[in-house]
Image 1 (cartoon, rainbow, N blue to C red):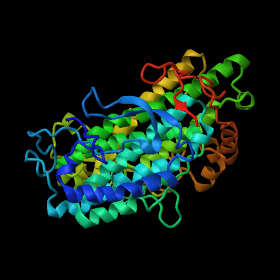
Image 2: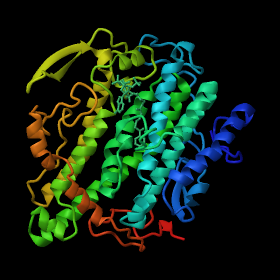
Image 3: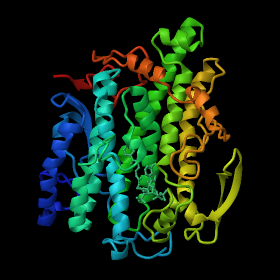
Length: 474
Ligand code: BYC
């Protein structure tokens, strides 16, 4: 299924055969480009960036590399190939044929899910808008822009569904996706994390590790959907998403590696000594990790959710990797939650499994997050240090769900508000931490050069050397 690049909008959905839809999307395209110009990466729009572009959705063609100016990136509509035998994999309609059109009764709910998914994509580009000015190397600058253009494409993926399947309502929603803005006081983005500013590269790496990983799990859940075009869209998005998490994973790894080198050189683990040498002390890395992990946990919604139960029952949104479960109906089972007891203790509550689907997904996500931590800790251990990076408890600093607003230690022990306020500077980035990190952020644009707070990557992109000219600055 190759992609038609002759059309104004590259696609593999035979857009040319539906003139009305094609015209509607061609009408939205200049609005998107205007948004990119105003709220996409600040500057660098005339630079040649070594980007990958999909030319087909199969293994051979999905990553074709070459120099592109970002506004000329071929944003388009790519769905995985249709499996004519695909059946509904979970919920009350298990085993029936998947839907090529949306049943009327699920229209509003599916629209809401698609809009929420779509809203995060431009939001992240807006959040990262200024980072090009402080990139630690050309390699990192290129990765930032790769992530940005692909998030733009993921917006296209959701806008296509809105236009193609939701008529006028869908077109209006597509317009609003460009009207809400990250952090805007009047029209913010829908989900909390996507209104948090990303001013520095440590936050960017945490975001791409933890928040893009929420994207992975949400897309995996939507890739199970009975609404086949949504499932196929998400399957292809997941292919691209892997690189975004790679950027976060290796980014944090390189920060830790550089810090360990400085610790070794100076024979010290004193945070102030490490900072004076221009590297990021490990306790500060931990505080940034605590912030972005806890914020990303909120993106899974409440532990107990009747929304999640009905998404599952109706076959709209499944569990990630639904095939790994034995029981796809999930009507008989229950799930036990540990909830705050209103004082400084906890109580257990058993709820029907369908109502606990957000928690099931969150738990899979947490297990996936641990993998990177193990890798980072391995290099700390190898360097002979006892310090370990840890994931805080899922109760820590929550704003959504049963633990919202309940002060706890990072280990999840409920504590008084006073104690939380007294200790929080040890657990979360303080103003002075942020000022220090910002002080390190100076753009390094010389080919092959790297900022002093981060180690070079082990290898370059697409078998090119690390010192390749990944961005030709104009
Ligand atoms: N902030 O029953 P509840 C990505 C709302 S990231 C603000 O608890 P439900 C990416 C919720 O919307 C993946 N509001 O939760 C990453 C609901 O509001 P309404 C994005 C929140 O509905 C990096 C109300 O609270 N994709 O792709 O079961 C870069 C009660 O809802 C939050 C999706 O999220 C929050 N954190 O589940 C680029 C998939 N959490 O509807 C991209 C689509 C909850 O009553 N979305 N609320 O007004 C969903 O599946 C669900 O909406 C949620 C919430 C999982 C987000």
